[in-house]
Length: 333
Ligand SMILES: Cc1ncc(C[n+]2csc(CCOP(=O)(O)OP(=O)(O)O)c2C)c(N)n1
Ligand SMILES: [Mg+2]
Image 1: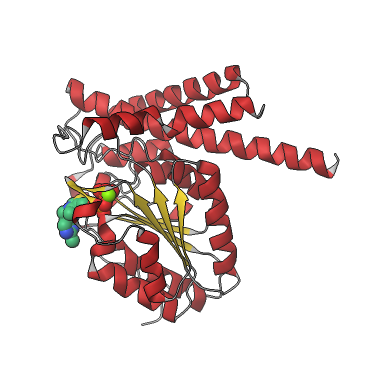
Image 2: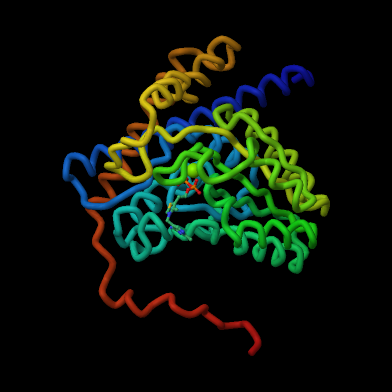
């Protein structure tokens, strides 16, 4: 194989991986919303529809042993990072096959096997935890990096700034991934901060801050790859503002009265998933038939995992007092 052929081959593999992750995240989010609406299961989710390109680019750029910290709106991030569907849906639906044996639910998913260390519902709280995970990586002599996802609203919290400051001061390998969907619950971004670019907040902490198109998975992949390279080389953290949009309201069932209809319509018209599909077909990196097949496989995989999960038991009552304390076996007192 010539060098040019190898590069073309890897561009094709990357395109397929990114598109697969995006369609899987979409299928998962849509199927969960459908099941809730139909009364098939009684849970709540914070939909990630519209933000899939960030999770795909991020997940594709990270190694499996790199760590991820995310939020309640992180189901797409889990898929990008490679959490098995059954463990993901099992946790969301509170079944014993879930990543946390069904005890945590959507807001508390961890899956250390693929590096997902924390999901939190406390806005901004993941940031200092990610900084601690990066300090641990350094102390253990590992070159893994830690990515932390949060929203635009989270950048107004004290814990965000404290974490940014410490990561920059100690030059830790953290990638701060702000998924700027332009709203925090029901409040538009312009009502909560007096700056145009969230990325400028990085300057105050002495770290590089880049504003990128969060609806372009390749742009996210590129930016995260560079940030990871920098982190692994001991050259410190990076802040990425990935500009995107939240299509489905803050929580499942949110009537979105506060959202200007024309703003939502414009965002939906620029949906990152059909946009990327079109781009790949035009670049001959994927045929329309391949793209159709990837979409069908995503829907089928979600359906199959859901079937397994819905027939799995709920957690045993005895699980109530398990997992409170670390297993200290082998760790000297
Ligand atoms: C410390 C804290 N304050 C307030 C809340 C209530 N709350 C839940 S989500 C949210 C908005 C967060 O917006 P953003 O960070 O932009 O994330 P998004 O939901 O848009 O992904 C708020 C204020 C909370 N969960 N935690
Ligand atoms: Mg937001």
